[in-house]
Amino acid sequence: MAIVDNAIYVDGVRAENPRSLNETFERIRERRGMGWIGLYRPSAEEVRAVADEFGIHELVVEDALSGHQRAKLERYADVLFMVLRPARYLDEREEVEFGEVHVLVGPDFVVTIRHAESPDLGRVRRRLEAYPALLAHGPEAVLYAILDEVVDEYSPVLAGLENDIDEIEGQLFEEDADATQRIYDLGREVIDFQRATQPLAGMLEALLRGSEKYRVSEELQRYLRDVLDHTLRVSDKAATFRSVLDNALTVESTIVARRQNDEMRRMTELSIRQNDEVKKISGWAAILFAPTLVGTVYGMNFDHMPELHWVFGYPMAVLLMVAMGVGLYAAFKRKGWL
Image 1 (cartoon, rainbow, N blue to C red):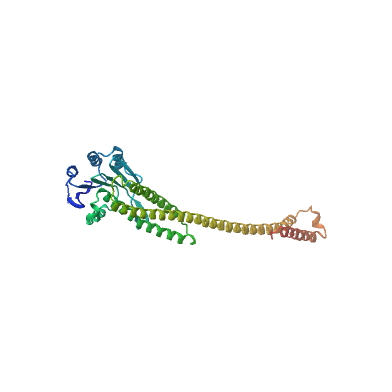
Image 2: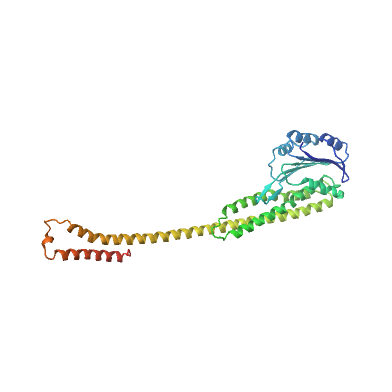
């Protein structure tokens, strides 16, 4: 069964614990108090039973069944529909997990539909039951407490993200450290966090603007303004995180480019040294090849070679070999090969 908790409250005090939705509906129809129904991943039949009883618009039913909605606030006649995106930081995985909770607020009822573990609505209920004076303000008090819980749960998320950003800033200038992927992943989390939190300020401002029309007490308005202040601080900090990560990504790109340039320069210098070595080897090979060629020709021992029987033939051959070697050495030396 998807019913997590189900109660009737009279003057801020828990008066009855109905055993079924039908019993809750009956008590509300008899105007015995305010009904607060907590559902966790309910079936389509359960959602439609609630919708039929309270005359909830079909579009709200579709949103409640499909889930994966953006944070928003909508009013259908005297029913207020709010979608909230709570979040929690998972230390072991160093990432942010987002949840979703739908809140339906009517004149004498509150229905919460939770699609994830967060937020802890049981804690919200216990807190309100411990302060009957606040709960006596009716469904709007429940809405305030849920908003306050969601915004409070953002604080550990901000602390986790801030710690991750500090770690990234420490890695930026470490040798052989590549933080690009982590910066990108963390940036995506911050963007998702902004999408969850940014609409809240507008939603709270809309609630405050409609306070007089829907007769929200001054006391509850003060509480809502306090939540609004906390929400604005959360949004400002998330915006700061995004700016820091954008700068970190720019710095990391610069560092990576510099490392690549250094590596290219090192490879270029190595290539130049290798070319110099090849030139030296080629130059000495050419110098040694010239006298070897002359010596090879004279080593053939042909009879019909004019130089063989010439008195100065041998000195001339030696002189030719030396002259060719010296000439090639001088030419290579002038070109910088030797």
